[in-house]
Image 1 (tube, rainbow, N blue to C red):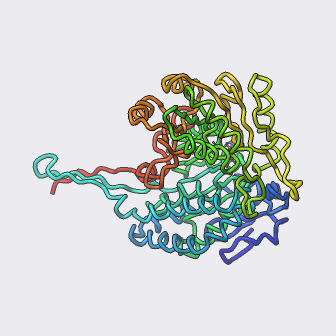
Image 2 (image 1 turned 90 degrees about the horizontal axis):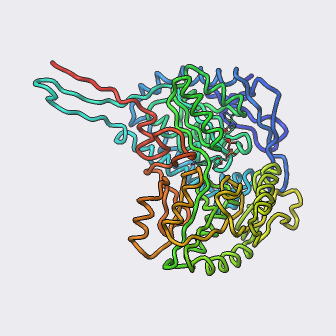
Image 3 (image 1 turned 135 degrees about the vertical axis):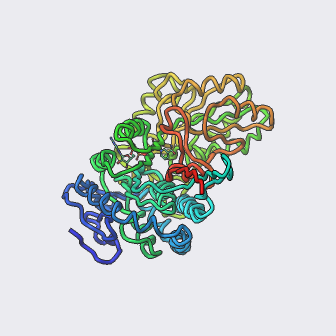
Length: 496
Ligand code: NAD
């Protein structure tokens, strides 16, 4: 049932009504009455209800995307990107409001949400270069009088299934490139914080994106499964936990789709004795505790090499203990709540388990509360000493403000330790030695590497994605990989 003719999603005054899907250019109620609440994780206030959309809803969205494809594909690339140029201007104009809204539904502070929106905009900017990025190649005279060229063509309907931790930026790792290359798109955002991205869709419509080119279906694994099983979906971009990434990779393979599935992380930051230890400590604090640790690039284990260990430990404990934890929209807040009560309980369980397995809780955030916010999902900064890869807290992704400390005798030992963990998303080294940094880069076997950088986040013109249990597929998000993923290279051999 279509509820609105105009392209506007409901305001938060309508928080007890299910938020609409966006299908074929109209905001539509889902065919189900099953919903999940979206709460402000700092205050517990109800912000909205997410429909757990059905297969029928997904089928309607894919049908709309399929119908829109021929005309959108035939729109010249230089005209398609005009929509993205206008969207970029609108996103810049509304960035502050979007950042506040995102802070309310996610919990991180406004500087962080503003940064997230900036990173999303960066992808729109990069996708504006499609007329150049999408060019093919030509070679004259591959044989006498015969020429050969490649032409990049869109494939039809692509879909995205995305996580809660960057609910604005991560969808924008995908759909701006998909539509810029002439495909159409169905997005299933995280069911935990899907509200701000609704505003982004409104802005895309205001920018002139034609009906059916971008569609949004809210829901959980049922809607995601319907996407994965749909024969008219040519490819799927997934970001989330590794267990689900692996499942999505297998299912998409079974139904013959292109797939890029970015999974979880357990990142190590290695600090050598010759490092600038103040720089390393500051970088560790912002990497570990920024976004309350809910970042796939967060360094969650710090490996202090040799005598670096003791000094960094002292500085880190002091710094972590003095962080201002509070409501994301309050001035001066460094770290907000985690996304939900369930997630808070999981983080605390992992700290408990780490303690039982022999780690020493040097800073304990388990009982943390924030005055005035009794319903917030708080976990205070936590530091565990003596974390080993054999412990659950050394092996599993915690995705909370929890730092494990461990010692190594050399950079080689640190790499051995990192390789005992299944993930391979990101890592950082802090050193003044170019040689040590080069050795580290050469042997780390990890996809995103920071050298004297705590959060190794590639900009939109570079690929984003991990290795090993952190990534299933071959083409990553962003960069040139995005163009490869969303187009097929067709080869034409001509004799006249
Ligand atoms: P999640 O795996 O619980 O959910 C991600 C998405 O998958 C959601 O849209 C969800 O509805 C859907 N989903 C859940 N179960 C599914 C199933 N069985 N089949 C198909 N889809 C299903 O992840 P989350 O808790 O929302 O996000 C946090 C995770 O995402 C962390 O592990 C984090 O490291 C990871 N992440 C990775 C990157 C990266 O670049 N590698 C970036 C951000 C987040």
